[in-house]
Image 1 (tube, one colour):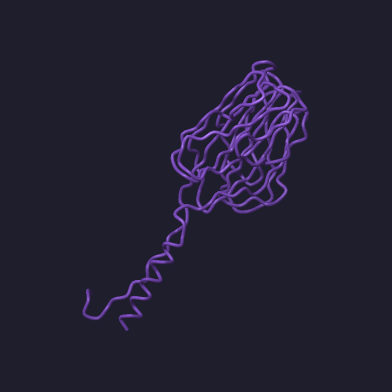
Image 2 (cartoon, helix red, strand yellow):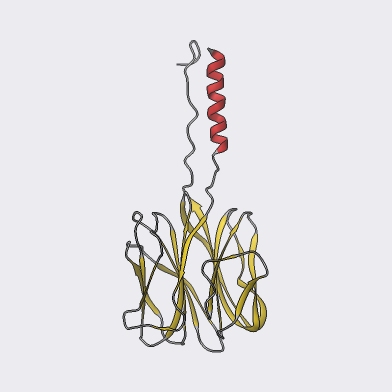
Length: 250
């Protein structure tokens, strides 16, 4: 009897040890707006190809082709609350990068993102991406950078992360269409490269100062943003089975 109880307790402990303390981030999907689209007075919509899921992180990375137009808001059809993380401007032509993000509050469903602008008539392009985990994702830190006429750079500069297994999402905007972007570090593209904006992601498995290197061909000015996300919540650890032994405790 005692051996059976001891075995049950050990089995429960092993199950707890087998459950990871943090769930891994996953890339779910991404879409890109056709480059050179001219926004109307109310903005431009872009739909995800598949249903989004609850607690997913949705990112919207936008390049606007002038110095004065701004984003007045972003909404979608599942009720996500978006907020702006930061912006970065290219010095030579005034193009501006915007990084917005939000967590899906509702359940799974078809989702179309609407980016609204302060004025009509500006050339723009943007990427959207969905990232998930078994926990809830919160922003850790971010950075931005600008490099003039360079063939290599660092997306968003170097970040100091709060912990291991963080999700890094970066966006690079370049001054000239037709450039190509390649990794000097390790990243994966969220969508196929567009004419002037590239959105990428990387999961940093260790807690360290980190950066994502890139190379531009031909050499060009690039502005970039890098945002790090950590997890809250994670996997619930199952309790160890409890048994009361006769004559031991109450």
